[in-house]
Image (tube, rainbow, N blue to C red; front, side, top):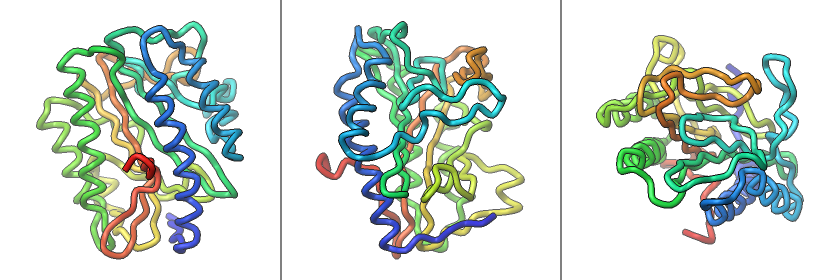
Length: 263
């Protein structure tokens, strides 16, 4: 692995990109309500990205299977959809849905990436619990990230949080390093595997990681739909996804995609 350690100047540049991401996601949370299409949310994200002088990271990303590049600025995934949902005027939010929105930008050569899952109107208590547990997993990482800590220690606690709630951690998708590119080394799993134990990540000051727990209510298996992008749970049970871009700094970490105006 070629893990890049970022200087304080670079971390501040990533934070600037992260603040654009935070502003856009905050606005999308406000706009996500019954009757709104996911294409509308995409249009809002595009407008705010242009106004910030940034570039939407996801639009035009090549399809790993050779299909069409990703057509949206945001990924909008509903209910049993895990990630990479394509915004569409035909997909309209309904009361009781849960919506995951994943979004990233590049600004002045540096990237920020974050995601949230919210309920649309009133949602089932079991779905609220899914959201709360998945968000708690991300908070566990934030509370424990610091120089010298092994990622396997954090991943084990994140995985235990999901399992204790009766949920499954998705194994097919993991977090990643981030900096001048959206996806950089290392891979950052939300679970402990033999591979992670063989090549554990010891956190160092200057590492910047996009940590993104993905949790299913049912079994962990997922598959990709015929559109070549949208990933759904195999058992069609609901899924949740949260993400922040986080820098490891002396004594702990800093979340670079928090909306600082809202803190």
